[in-house]
Length: 410
RNA sequence: GCCCCCAUCGACUAGCGGUCCAGGUCGCGGCCCUUUCAAGGCCGUAGCGCGGGUUCGAAUCCCGCUGGGGGCACCA
Image (cartoon, rainbow, N blue to C red):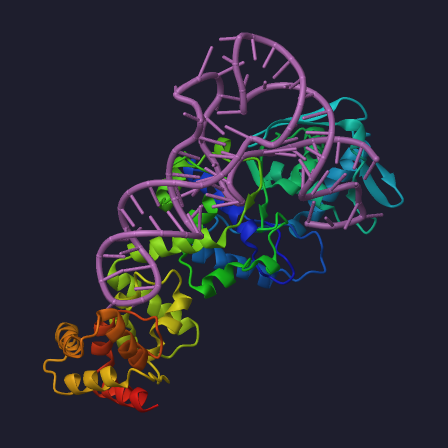
């Protein structure tokens, strides 16, 4: 995985990493992170930390300390010189170039695409070592695959054209060629590579929007892979158990934000009540809301079935935490009648509130739809809210009465 | 220009020669439930890019075309 200079982790890279992770777990193998920085000018330490924390959030950490391509510059140079001595490479204006075969084809059996072959005459003699002594990516990468005894290289399909070059290098040094699996890229709705203009693309953005890591993992796994035609919701363990490279689709997939929302909603609803509340409180705390945790805990069950992402909570239940402005012109009578009924109510619970308000509507001859809506607007400041009676109970008598009065006279 | 890859409902996909007048999920539409919004239940909408082959039979195999993508750096 190559970190970008900005240190932001693209969701497409995560999907590729996830496939590596699932495959490695399934085969009791190790999943290695290699920072491919032959470019010395870039500061990658921060980026590595960032990748690490993003993947940790998703629960798909790697299995060993990351290695840096930079650290093996000398080893690469040694190999390059040896290749020159053997006549397999040659010097060219201070650089060292690899002698690619001129005839025949270079072929491999790709674990997701099947047999792929490229005419050797179309492969140019690539630079192994630059004139300033730094090895190139296409040299360092296959060498590290050999040194690290990599058995499977699962990477984006933009690397397909690099593969025959790397295979030839590995053969030249007598190394064992790993199994390659090239996974398709992820597109936005317009069929172009997924980028910022399509919506969220960085892991942090999804986290900030209030997606659950387990939903992200499930969704990402299904982007280009399916165990069968039926199953959609799968735990991490089930994913590990059922994943297979053979069933990875060779064609690119579009990132469907609507389906992600649906899936996140499924995971949110499946959470035990207290777990949902806990995660919601943590999310709010991390995103600048200093709302009373106890009240959030009590409000959580009212919204668990209604939101698909945590970031929908403030708009949905914010009225419990701050003042609202509302006017109910034309319906002041119900609102005032409701106020009077609630003023004397005891005990003040969702159950008694409902009974009391229904009685008010009966008296006024209003249908539930007609009667409750003005009250909802007065109390929550919105036509859309959690359950009215539970909301009123949580708000408390004092605030409720004040809001009813204010709305009726606004 | 050259090389490589890809091609089933709007989207993700199942399908690996007959059991497919193509199945599941999201979305979308309708109905039910209902204090709003959701959730849930039921019903529905919509697809094998085109043209040639092979075969008794093709979404499935082959070729061509078209369309999309990637690559052709002393970038990774």
